[in-house]
Length: 66
Image (cartoon, rainbow, N blue to C red; front, side):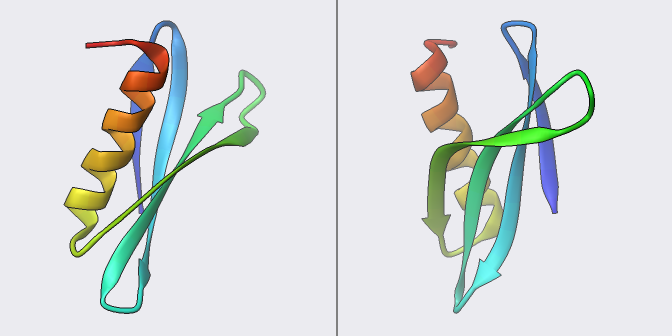
């Protein structure tokens, strides 16, 4: 499952997968050719939404986007 964001003219995917009893989300930047590159941003939580939200907050802090 994934969530797509556009920030500062760039596209990002937040990719989620279940792990044990919770969820892990990672952030990847989507390139113009459709390929993607993981950014090293990860988050875990009990629910998918919480993990995705945490990963998005980390990305926004990294980019300094409100």
